[in-house]
Image 1 (spheres, helix red, strand yellow):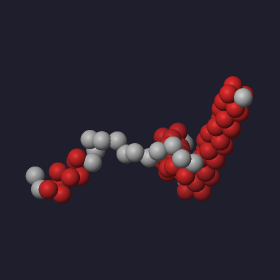
Image 2 (cartoon, rainbow, N blue to C red):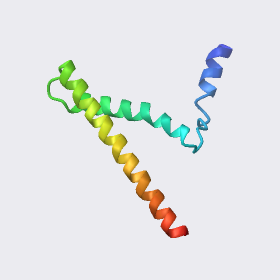
Image 3 (cartoon, helix red, strand yellow):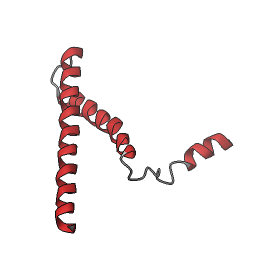
Length: 83
């Protein structure tokens, strides 16, 4: 096995350290995009590009909005508990 292949395989043995800063939450957007695309690919009975794009964007937006609302509720709850 070459050193390059061994290095690539070794990167999968430890998790990526992203952190918990507000900027690190931007890493969720590609994950949400992938989830919405794969979900809509498996659920739409007939895939037409315009309909598929519209449905994927709607699902992406609804997931992001739900996560934002959930984060705000949790922050408000934590603030009420700690104050």
